[in-house]
Every structure is written in C-alpha cells, then in structure tokens.
Image (cartoon, rainbow, N blue to C red; front, side, top):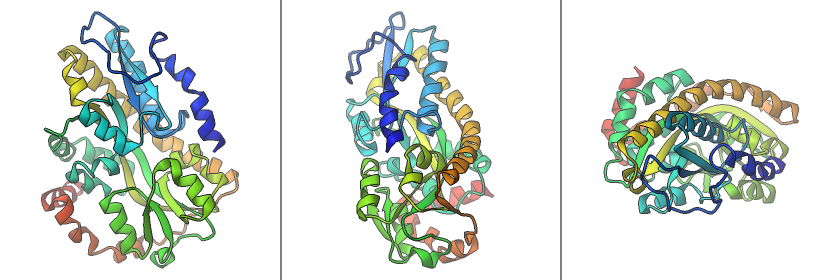
Amino acid sequence: MKRILAGALALSMVVGLTSCGTSSTPSSSNTSSSNEKKTLQIGFTTAADPSDPYYYVATEMARILEEKSGGTLGLELFPNGQLGQEREMFEGMQMGTTEMAVMTNSYVSNFIPACGALDLPFIFEDTDQAISVMNGSFGQSLFDEFEGSGVVPLTWAVGGFRNLVTVGKAVKTPDDFKGMKIRCLENNTYMNTYSALGANPTPMAWSETIPGLQQGTVDGLDASISVLYTGGFADICDYLSLTNQFFAATLVCISQTEWDQLTEEQQTWLREAAQEAAALQADFQVKADEENLAKMEEAGITVIRDVDYDAFKESLSDFYTSMKDSIGAEYVDALFEAIG
C-alpha cells in the first residue's frame, strides 16, 4: 500500500516528462496543428513506479515522442486509475472522453472478443514466443478487429506472465484451487479458467484487491510479478506460486476521436514511439521480473517454484475447444498455428 501511495506522489515528477504548462485535470482542448504544442493524456491503473510495466512503457513513449516531434507532441501520464479503471478508460476512448490508455488485454477482450485468444491459459512457453506471435500476422489480425470500435490500437506491449499470490494457502496443483476465492479480471476466459480448475472466480476492480485480501473477500489473485511487487502484495500475501498461467499482453491505444484530430505526421510519430517503447519495455520486463521476484522473496513472501505445470495443462485439455464459441474458432486455431 505504501508503494501505491508513493506512486501517486511521483506524479509531479512524471508530468515533468511532458509539459510544465499542462493542466493535471483531464480535458480534450488540444488542437491539431503540428506547429503548436499538443499534449495527449494517457492513463493506466497501476503505480507510477519505475518497475511497473505500464508506467515504464508510458514513460518511454513520452520520451521518444518528445524527441520525434521536436517537442511539439507530448504525453501527460495519469497512473493509479486517475482516468478510471480499465473498462471505464476503454469506454471513455470509445466516446472520445478519454484520450489514451495502456490497457490489459484481458479487459480489451471484453470489447474485442478475438483478443481473448491471447488470454488462454498455459499457451506461451516464454516471452520471446509471445512477442513473436503478437508482432506477427496473428497480432495484426487482432488489430484489424478494432475497425469501427472507436479505439485505435498502436502496439502490443508485454506485462509478463501472470502468477498467483495467495493468503493462507499455497497453490502447486489444480486440486489446490478447489474452493478458493480468486480475484479475477472481469474476463470470460479468466473466469472460465478458474471455474474449470474448481476455484470461485471473483471479479474485482484493481483498486479493491488489497482491501479484498485483507478482509477475506478473496483468497488470492494473479498478476505479473512486477505489478505484484510495485503494488505491495509481498506485504499482504503469504505465498507467490509461479504458475505462469496467463501471459499478460498489454495494449497501447488511443481514442479514434483523438486519432482523427492528429495530422498524418503526428500519427506516425505516435505509433512509432509506442512501438519503440514497447520493444524497450519487453527487454526491461524480463529483467525486472527477475529482480522483483528476488525483492518479494526478501520481503518475506514464500515463493512456490515446484508447480505441477503438466497437471494444470492436463486438467484444461478440453478448455481450449470450449472457448472457441466466445473467442472465435478461427482465432483460437490461428493462434495455435502461429505458435507452431
């Protein structure tokens, strides 16, 4: 919790990356002239912490965009859900009231069902494989599904693999999940995965997770190691099970309304800045996860490494087929083909 509060205090430093004259109150008064300073607001729900993947990609994007535009186009960062939770930000972009966001793909897939293919459990062997698939023809086919949604995807980014933190009970096998209340993204694939494992999926906003754990509303949750570290969960939970059950693809996106107000040159700068920042963040993420895992262990959380991955995959053997109706059979099949 202390890290979350510290993240909010770090906002004044973040604003310095963009424009000293920019208001901290969300607005949409920017002009489209490339000769005047234009600042776009980008939101995300996690902390303004250098180890946080959402903060990192947004910060690097701001830096690169300033360079590419010669200081005529910038970003103002709004961490800690200041522009709303993820569903609210996506809907805000659709309506044109939110300008930009770094989003968890698992929330995006509520609006673009084909993106749910990337949420399937135990799909990718490592980060390199996931990046290759997302940046290839399969990832582009998902971007094509955004046409007419009111949101323009700029690039895929890497949130790392999602692992499980729990209170009172460690998880090593599928049987350990039975009866547990697991905070879950409001996402069809995640909820059905936990149900298939015998757990009770409990949708809950990110801001409610720590109170939920403290009050016993939930027994655990999954997130990437870096997010778990920057969120202070080593101080709340007893166990961190390295289940790697979901790959946390993230998305940098912009409202179609705001995109259409940019010149072609500004659009190019913005897309290139997002892609270059995501590439830097992917390399950073692997190292950050290793460092943050060690820090969480030093903080006292018990790390469970002997997870029975084969047992999990076997228990979910029929799950992928069952998800084809909601995701789209062509996208599930294409994903497995892309993985090879």
